[in-house]
Image 1: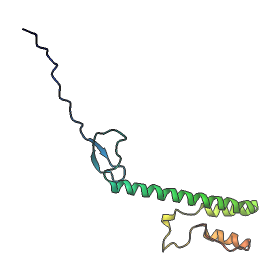
Image 2: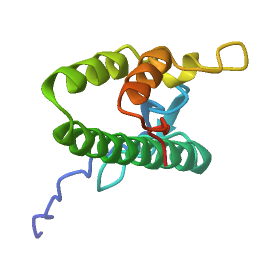
Image 3: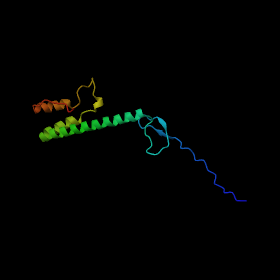
Image 4: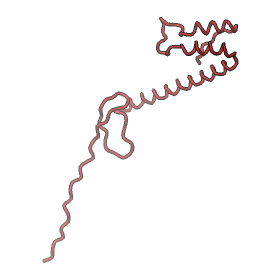
Length: 129
């Protein structure tokens, strides 16, 4: 008789299991399927979209801030050192934008800017787009 060839028994490969992840946007735990490529960061498309919109909003805010800073630097470059120091001090006392509201219509420092503008015989203009 011929010796039967024995083939090694196939060991069943475990199926890829879902990996538990935390959504970067909303903090909800979710099961991310095991697949090639980068691991998902968001639990659903809506969270991914909201995160994208927030990144774009932050980029716009940064661009506006940079433009305002360049404007201010250009303006201060044309003023004398004493006046520029007064304006810079007034601008640095400006509160965060989220603190402004109906009960706080003027920024802190607006009065100082108005005084400096009066000394220079200028009309104060807000530093926004």
